[in-house]
Image (cartoon, rainbow, N blue to C red):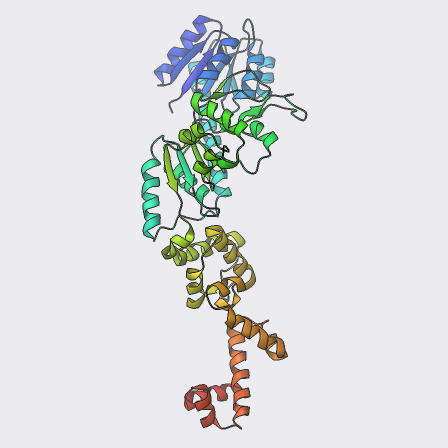
Length: 464
């Protein structure tokens, strides 16, 4: 398991000996002769593990550990202790060190400790990725039956394995974050963090702390040092959702970070180096926002290295039915309920609807239908009236509601599931129509356009 290891010790002989052991095992090794120099090195370089001597002139190992752990929680530290320093080494473990090795250094002990520390670090990263996967277990897969979505996915898959920054545009509910996560899964950063920030959901006075972190005591309520989103996304992807809602003041700070790849925490003075790939998204017309003085042109072109536009659902009608089928499976899993059975007629209505809320609106509709009619057949008459009116079927439902309101028997049918309600209405309809024609089946056949044999069969079933 290769990795970059920093050795911090004020004894040149110890550094030389330890370096030889580690390089023989294929590790990349750097050195620092003091705690101060170690902290400076960590500011500018990515390190997988640190060997840190406890007793050094200047800042000792414990103070170096304390300061480093505030900034680089993900890096494991192995403390180097002399004889008689075991109690101090135990204190270091309580402060977050991974392990300690005693002088004189044992080859076997060193290699075992290094392997274990790097395995633990990798395990923590995998757990973090798994937690993200669990959080997004109900994520909707990208459905691409339509030509416009196939073209979108072709572009996404071309840019995913590069280091290019991406600006994703599209209406609310089209799946911009889903596109960003799909890009992450197919990128070189797929095993690194994906940190999402909804810029519109964070109050203006807190967004700098959220993005850049803050130092302890930076403001009232800052009782501890906080790591910001940029730092958490180091070596991975930072997804800035709704970037168009960010203030001009914050835009200026974001631009500086994007240009220099370094920043200071709120209340801090130290520059923190980061390496992040930025994916931004917005539902706003940023070119118009630039003209209106609401968005920085330089930031726009910095983010818009590779533009992607997610088409609205109304422009991809071919995707609606397969997307519905896919979403129903997601909803089943989410609610642990059997999905309803959608008739051909209801699918036709879904295809005709304009979907102003896009995929999110479809998802919410299917969630409601699943909760209300789990495992039952659902006809289009159970869809929202507004939707039916827009597609020219509202009058049917209105008429049915008017009749039902005048007849208690029909009103009770509304409490049944579709299959039983259909059977009950057929019985109600035939018996009433038969009364109208004085019990004459031939006249009934002419009146309702149904074969006499079918009427006799249905009446027989009713009377049984």
